Image (cartoon, rainbow over all chains, first blue to last red; front, side, top):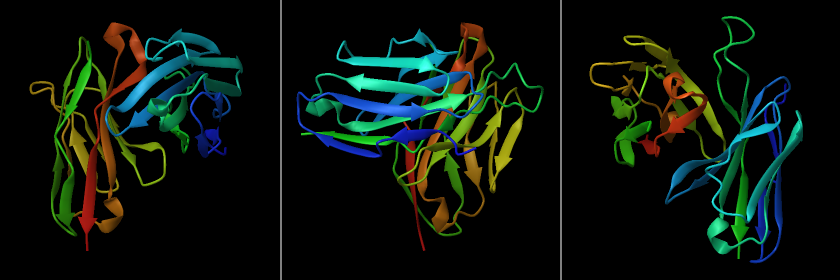
Length: 120
Length: 115
């Protein structure tokens, strides 16, 4: 498997523009997570899905942020309108249910390489 | 709520030095504990884990022991290499709170190893 795939790897945009980040989780994984990483606040969980359904979006900073998972192999994180304080690295991660697939499943969280967003 | 506290960084060591990175946690139930590592320009990847008290996780020369009595999961390595330079995150998942699916991360600590 190619792992969790994120795009774009780098995005530079101007304040007020719409930004869409994309994620393809590992095939067969039931959970998908969106994290944001900044120097000031470290790694923050924004939202996570189980079987394409949003379970906890309490980390989404405000209404400018939205996330969707239309099917098991694709998710988007959208920021509209973007602001300079949204500049960060956004990570997508996926995992399978540790209760499934027998004792060999550790429930490990697999991360993508991240999307570095710069809002000018 | 659940939380993870890591020692303040950054940490700079010479090659072959002994490494200890402290991690303590607060959890309602009996969590699983993890160390993740992030190399420059990459996402996080699992380094090691422990799922119950007194378990020792180990990988790539790193070790950490789940200490329930001190609520700690300190990371150690006997002899660090330049290639160990990275950011290290301690994390937990807590089935008692119904949050078994998600991880709570510490702030991370940057390790730099000089030749």
